[in-house]
Image (cartoon, rainbow, N blue to C red; front, top):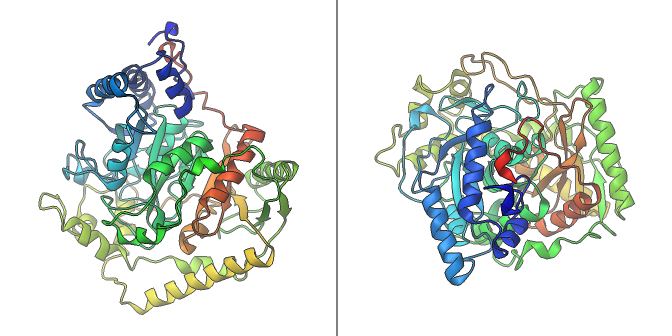
Length: 502
């Protein structure tokens, strides 16, 4: 694609692409060629970003079909011709699903997950499968090595939807699907100056996705803008008989989440600020912590300037004590074994086989081993669920007592860590310090992270908004108005426009 085409692929949005398609300035094929060129140029450039696991071998053919359809009858749906990448935890009928592991390299299920079916029905083009922390944890895996932050390739990009987050941040795609069990959508989005939404758990079907902890697992969108995030959620949200938990979404899904996107959406909103660090490893005397606090304080001032009523230092009863008690591995073995049992061709049929496989990186084997021999019949699981409900009620109460529409806090209180040289060979667990992402999955509330600016080192900072169940519309109102007033999103300088991008 040349400059004569009159369309900029770099930082393109769904709306800008569709406007250009209608004007004859770009085709789906040209769009796909441009992104494939960017992937070829940047994704394997040492030190490699490693965002892409498998490129759709039929991407250009599918693009031609979508172009022919557009010429003949117009757009198939709201994402016609839009390239989307999918976390490799999610099944696609025409590409392998590896779960980030060499053990499953080349494994094909022959079916689409429900979210993939819905994307195709909406006219989206599945461009590629993205790398992920092996079996949905961290940002490294035996199938690809380690992923890297495009803003500083020596640092972590967060995980486990690391490839999806990097692909959006570095303009290797328009949209991405991630999965969030403990923050795996919001972390990569925050580290990539992007928007990431963890939906209310029953809102999006998990059918066709390897589970980790079903009471916390959910799929959701990553995009560069709030509007694109809403457009993607429109397509994937709603009841799916193949995932009965989504029945609770009936009556809770609006005609379109874009109806909540108004520049004055912050007026009258009451937003409570959680000041207390939620991570036990947060160091409040660290320089990066204080830089991030300055950025978040500036964001809070911007919220107030846009008409929000900011209620500072809201206390959640027992938050620091309860949150660490909510984690556990009681669900993993049963859910993973049940999922793999459905595939006679699976190279491993049980969690135990995965743990004992030398194909899996040692760090991940050690963590997965914690799930062996545990079930949801264990007394510890009952205690965990009791604590989660106690925390859930405490959040409900705090929001009711202060009349809040949402809670706000930094997605991370520290900069991304330097990636260890031995990350794929060591048994030592790699952490992401200052991680405030656990509250949302533990209580089942939706949360969205939005770019809030950058530290002095040029590293992105995300501010997160948490709302009541099925209050995605409220979160979109807040996030969109804040985004439009501040425009903090900036692409990484390491992956600039190529000559063929414009």
